[in-house]
Length: 114
Image 1 (tube, rainbow, N blue to C red):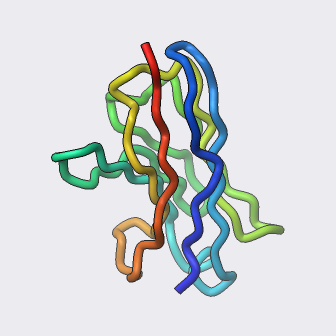
Image 2: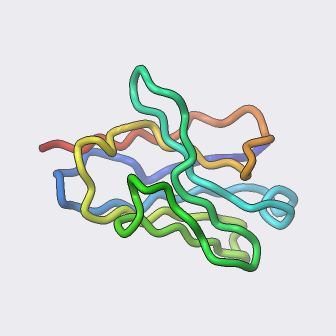
Image 3: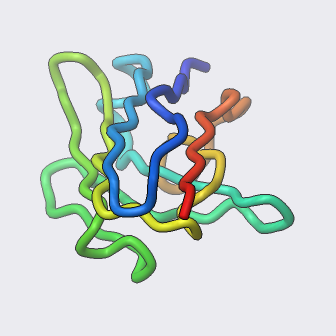
């Protein structure tokens, strides 16, 4: 299963990052896609969902700051992260919604410094 997230890094609070996730046409075309994140000692939580053909939706913690988009031509999903905060520090993953594909992939680390 191909769920390769990339684009993470170290960023200062208030800055921006853009995460990318490439997957297969089979997975992308059949599912709503989502971004999940897992901070140390915490559960892996869904933070943004891009359904097929309808509006995206977000967890309250990222609403108004993050934007999820789908690129049908590339079978990719993106997460534009603006005005990041230290509590956004986590490993970020992509998967379908609900997350029915394993393995999840390594994810991409995002670290926000204050």
